[in-house]
Amino acid sequence: VIGQLCRVSTRYEALICEINPIAVRPDGRLVAVDAVLEVDDSALPRIPFPLPDRIDRIENPIERRGREIGVTYVDLDGDIGLIASGAGLGMASHFRGERAAAGRAYAEALSIAQSCGYVNGIVLATTCVGQIRELENQLSPAAEAYRRALQLTGEYVPPSAGEVHLGLARIHYEWNDLDAAEQYGQQSLQQVRQYDDVIDRFIISEVFLARLRLARGDIAEAAAMLAETEKSVRQNNFM
Image: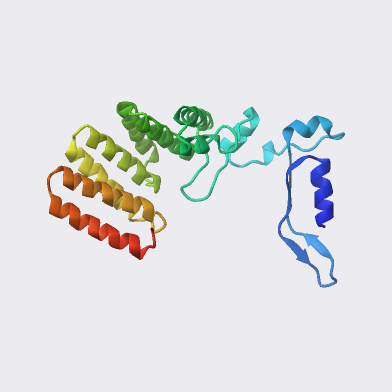
């Protein structure tokens, strides 16, 4: 089986050549319960017979639209998405500090999501654009992007909404509007508390609120909040 997979992969210049799962019948024969073969588009002219186009079988509208125009979009479970031009370009550029490249990739992803009417994609891309603007110290455009993302969420409040509120809290802190910063910071904390798997955001929100107390001159309250945050960090092994 492995030898056949290797031959198919080499012959068709496959990006993915996979059998998963594979079953063993009572008589000992192997059965491929499911299989995936994805061929590199640049290899298609070298294959002597046509292969079926998978675009029609792609259910995600933003992934299908990206495929049509040659942009890779990877939709992940939960509240994490890869929104990029190319395999991870936007996210990788963001983490490497290449803000201009990340900004272009997120803007392109936003354009694709808007053309498809894919609301979740629009929210995620808009949030990422806001983060890039904030990192570039373009606070007004960042705040506008964050507010637009919140407006698009509607009644459903995803885990990312806590991150958006925290972004607005940071911006208002920089503007010395401590009351608004407090309001957004508390909203962020309330939202991330609803999700057990976002302990990192919970900690970040608590640290921000402690910093805000310190800015107001309430040293004792800031110290008490940080002590409680440290307990949460240790209880969740978030070291």
